[in-house]
Image 1 (cartoon, rainbow, N blue to C red):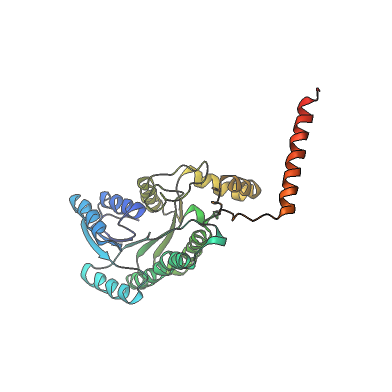
Image 2 (cartoon, helix red, strand yellow):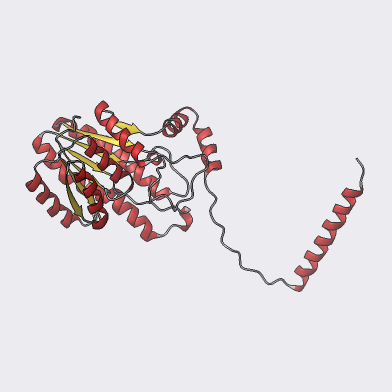
Length: 293
């Protein structure tokens, strides 16, 4: 895809990977960048950086889960700024907790933002791209869309779903001259993940590296863009030795915090039993230490 002089819309553009992608696209001399997120103030800051590079920037502070508002906003954007050539679905949220302790409101938020918000926006823009017979859609999944991560079951589920959604659209929209790609970064050093407990041996990459990989993937027409050697290694390990990957994940998963156990009130006979066990253990230790082997 030749991105010079084109119009792109990036969701999640106020921070992290979305922000880095917006700035990298500005360096590639796109005509206009439409920045979408919920935080207007942060969007203004990113827009100022982009306009300082000589590229036009438009901000849209909106919640992607509000379907009616998104529908109206996209119609206005298309009417005011012409066709959108590139859509980058980057908005997402992540929570880390064991499945048995997961909370329904957090699960619903991950599903709503990561999946339903992306679905709504993509359907609105893809229909218009189809009428123009051109366009490129990039859905930001994750390495967790290939290799599920313990303690992040819902997030992994959404990222697996994004890959399936992307593969289906790639085949369906090809006849309309629309390319659909998936971007799969591994753990990235962003605000969203700094409160998470890192998996052992995983080295976070920078958002800038992810953005640069996207540009290369767009130029090479790659359907899936894996970012970083750790991602490639994990995928190959899953294909060739899934048992080894399971073992690595088991060792690398951060331990879940233990809940303090309530103190139980011991009966008289339980106390006697504990005292006798302690005496037996101490006598055995004395016996073993006195033996000469």
